[in-house]
Image (cartoon, rainbow, N blue to C red; front, side, top):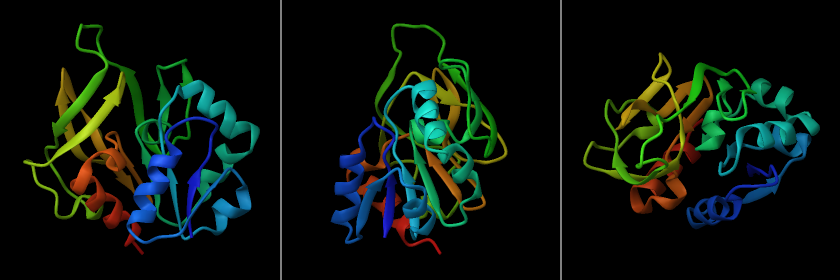
Length: 193
């Protein structure tokens, strides 16, 4: 069973539909036991950092998530909350990736919304992906580039398009909204051991 974390916001249904289309059973939940016992966990993300973290804290998921041993995928805000700190709402996050989430410089092209390709692609999650493939992004905050960066995107400045540390994976882009290449990312994740 694939657990999709329900945190009171976001696009959980889009992720559920994308995962089910690949032939996997899902459950949308904020129950600690269901998340702990899931084969894999996906933390989809659309929303605001401090609100999402408060929701996790109220359900003790902020202490559960870092202890999980199964493959875990954070998408967009889900990836950002796996970092140490977000400038959005001055939010202390889960601390899995030793990175800060920063706000893009104020310009007339923020938020970053639309299709972009990836650079410096590596890791199991991104197998079969090339620099010609485009993914859908929508965000005003970004994860710095660091030692856990497995792919970058350049929009105003370089940022982490994908991250990985141990069993924790993250994508700033939305695989569930990125067509066939997004499905490939989800399939790669769902096949991880």
